[in-house]
Figure 1 (cartoon, rainbow, N blue to C red):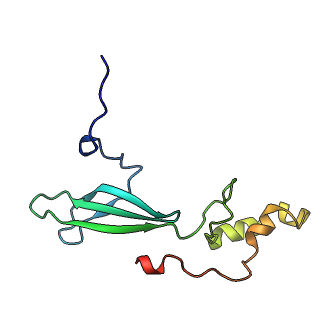
Figure 2 (figure 1 turned 90 degrees about the vertical axis):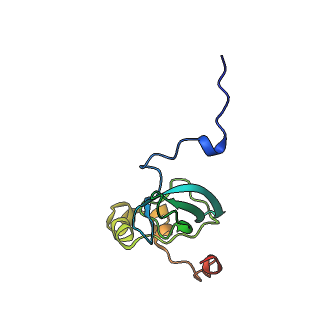
Figure 3 (figure 1 turned 30 degrees about the vertical axis):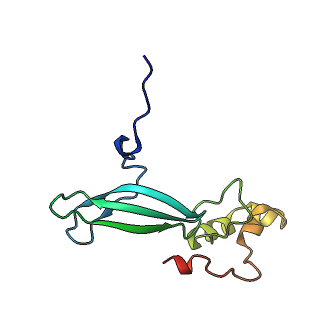
Length: 124
């Protein structure tokens, strides 16, 4: 017997370890994700619904990647995501920084010639 896939509205919510935890701004009850949509590779639009049935508030939030904590092994050259200061300092302390100035760590620490405009400013 083959099981049919469940319709979208009957699928189980994401596990808490995957979902971004959010609370209702009005009643402070936990809110759950109804849907999510990628706006850019760094920004998602997320629709939340309050778990408090007496409140019933639904709202939209934006989740944005703002900095790199651990550099990617397969970086996309079209993505600009600044390296966190603590990560930058750790990379600068690494022994490979003193061996060869053409290594990837040096390129990671190099500041871009011109910081790109905030491409997401109009989405807020």
